[in-house]
Each structure stands twice: as C-alpha cells, then as structure tokens.
Length: 122
Ligand code: FES
Image (cartoon, rainbow, N blue to C red):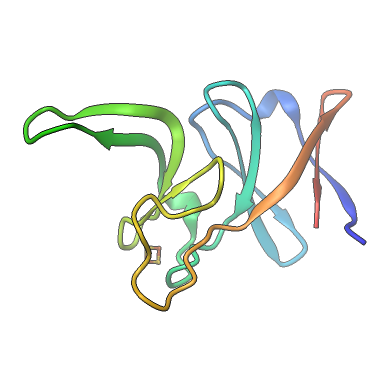
C-alpha cells in the first residue's frame, strides 16, 4: 500500500518552475501545468539518470511544415539537461519515440493538495 508524505507548501509550487524535494533517498520534482494541475515526477532521467532539476520546463515545438514552427503545450514538457530528451508532464511519456529497447517513461507520483500542503504517495 502506498504511503502518503507531506513534502511542500502548495504556494511554493509554481507553473513552469521546478521545485525539487527529497523523499527518502530520492529527489522528486514538483511543478504545475498551465491549467494549475500539480505534478510530481522523479528527479532522475529514465535515459541515463541525469538530475532533472538542472533541466528545464518548456513546451512542444510543432509545425505543419518547414519554417512554420510554433510552441504549444507551454509548461507541459520537461527537458533533460544531459541529452535533451523531453518528457510529457501529463503522462511521463517521451516527446519522441524512445530508442529501441529503452524504457524511457518518466515516473509520475500521485500528488494531492490539502489545506495548503502538498502530499505525494510512494
Ligand atoms: S540522461 Fe536524460 S536524456 Fe540522457
């Protein structure tokens, strides 16, 4: 059964910013999507273990043709600082298909807010 841990104040978690917190021996990154939804994800990249708190939160660059690129889904993508892989903060999936045979899903934690505090289950 998952255990719930109080790990931060709700007011400290802002859209487009990363708030790293320790949970046991692990680091968890807290952030908010543009819609205000709280997200808690592993602080280690599933590719080669980089510390994701030194990456950035961004959006998805997409376009129908060469030279017509626009940024969409602002604050819903986390980019790793080492090799630049990007992960969808809604699902944990990589933004582009993972290299063959590699498990590249970013771990998401169940996170809740209650009485101005953030709780994560592990
Ligand atoms: S360690 Fe994160 S993309 Fe390689």
